Length: 238
Image 1 (cartoon, rainbow, N blue to C red):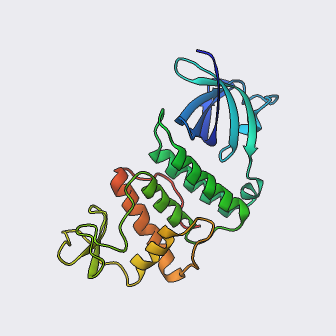
Image 2: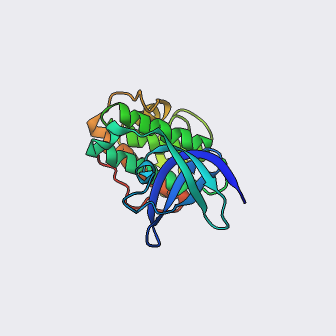
Image 3: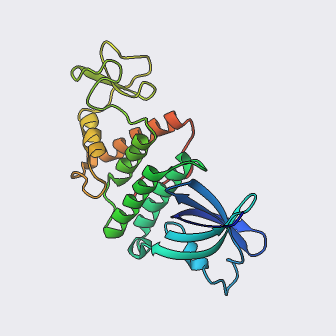
């Protein structure tokens, strides 16, 4: 046991004892960290305001048997503009909750960390794009190795005759490989999803209001199927 340095983005926290708080942090090096901030709920706490959700922080931790104790914390990025707008706060909450659902403890999580960092920086820079959350969830699918196929058959790899979409089989299917339960998506939706998936979070293509709602619905259902869990109270209609 001893002191160690780390950094990460605060995902959430909850009360612990009379004055302490457990703070869950996404570290790029160690995955999900469960730490305790002693006395943080007291009025005179010296770093309580630095441990709010979405904050990117630099930490000094004292290693404990069950929980590491935060002994020092400095803000790297606070994202103040994000916090001043309800839509952006809701979108950030969506990102954090979805990341929290896929990241494990004690494993390298650089790609999830960078994805969340890009998402928060995109929100900090402006209003919520209608397809930002769709793009973010597709990014999560890519990070964990389950990205859906949109431009080629998930069964045989051919790029023509793509008639159905299968959540279980990993994307679009041709007539030959279609399986029970594969669904027919609205014309243009798979191409729309493909464009979103290939774009940067801060440079998404122009949104199509007639397709955006279905795009997030398909993406959410796909991710929930492969994670075998619901994404809780995540808000998707910002």
